[in-house]
Image (tube, rainbow, N blue to C red; front, top):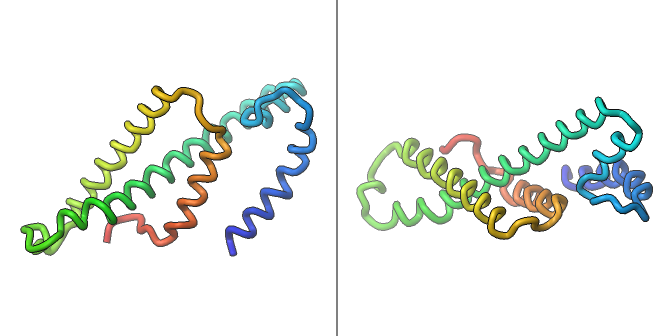
Length: 147
C-alpha cells in the first residue's frame, strides 16, 4: 500500500518539473538545484542543496545497513553456526552479530568508495535511489538491533 501511494505522490510532485525541463541542456540530477540558481534565489538553492545532500546520505545509510544485515543473516552467520561449532552452543550471540554487521558496513562502504574511484562517473542518481527503494521493499522486517 505504501509503495503505491509513494509512486503516485512522486508522479504528482515531479510531473511539473519534468515538463519544464524538456529541451534544456541541464543535467537531470542537478535540475532542481539549477532552478533556484537561475531565478537568483541563493538561499533557496542552499536549502535545495542541503535537502539533496540529506537524501543522498540517507540512501547510502539505508543501502549499507540493509546489505550488511542481509550479508550477516544469509552469508556469514549460517557459515559460522553450521554443525556442532562452539558458536552454535553459545546462548548469547549479540556481540558477535553486532561485530559482523559493523565489519560488513565498513567493508561495503570501502568497496563502494573503491568502485566509485575505479569506475568514475557511473549511473545517474535516480537509478541508485531506485536500488535503495527496492531494498526497503524487499526487507521490511530487518530489525534495528539483532535479535
